[in-house]
Image 1 (cartoon, rainbow, N blue to C red):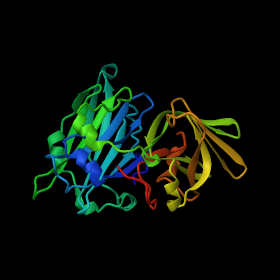
Image 2: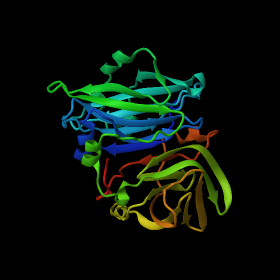
Image 3: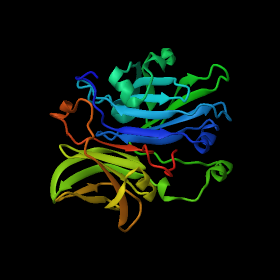
Image 4: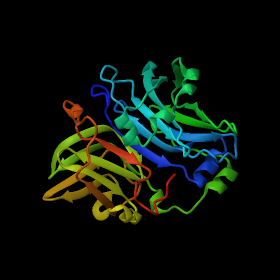
Length: 322
């Protein structure tokens, strides 16, 4: 990995199930998380299939934050879409605010994984496809709140297209569905594994003393925090996480997560709700003492508290994936 350029700032991993693809078959994005940057820029991400009724493309999606020291406002990240047949769409996205965020400039660039990256991300470097980028060589200007659709892969036999979507805004944008038939098809009973945890504008306190603050944030069914020289703490609301080694060892309220590690008490206090509910709730936690990020020396001079979110987690059975 290039030691001067790359920094993982968030990892969002999810897999499409058949039910999720039914939604995508209506030529609409299946939204799967997003990130909020320090300056307030929000990028919501999703995928979709065209034409309607196509169910033969089922990607795993990975979004990896990327640091470019000389471009602090470009919000770069690498987007990876893996198909079951081994093909991979992989490209770099840079989003730069313009005109006081009334518009955004989006640049797409090819990127080749190093052998180490290919191993970490579970991809075949020889199956990476980027020919679609010839259609996006010039910068794309997107209005605040608009959705950008990028055609990334096409099935040569069926002509089914996989489309990557980015909704770019200066504030979170709620999903609004007006078609009652679509609502009826998608409706289900809300289960605990459907609820996302959110960390936005949070402060970390150790034994009552503030040790870190962050303005941006992320959300997902699993969220994790890496404490330097300690390890990674991963959290979930669902008891099903016990299948992956999680234990009921933390608590969450509307704007606080509390847990202990050894003799130390940690509290994550947020400026926005972690869960939209009143009261105190059990939180399942997995401690990973061996977790390290590539090029950890890059954190010298940076915040040093990597965090991220995921919609699924390896080894956890019974957790619904969207």
